[in-house]
Length: 104
Image (cartoon, rainbow, N blue to C red):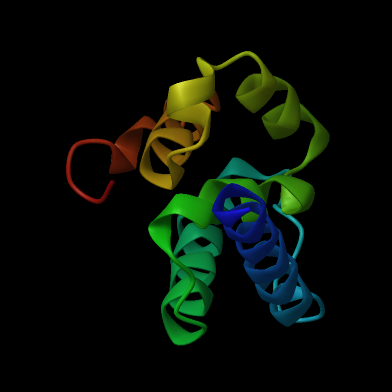
């Protein structure tokens, strides 16, 4: 029974955070130039809503553009559930290398 309650708790928390993000988070821009600003805005929202790190990558997925969704789907599942790994992979894969040296 504890496992069921824990599962329901995770589902209800995820839904609550997803609802909080609706209307506040933008869809990921297609233009690579805007990616750093996009990720900074997303991270600000995650911090202000106190979204746990374990849920961040999952909550970001619906807002990714189609190309980014495809890239994340090809990731190792363990890495695909880590926001920092998803962000790093997207920046590298989408050829946004100027920020890799210092800002990621």
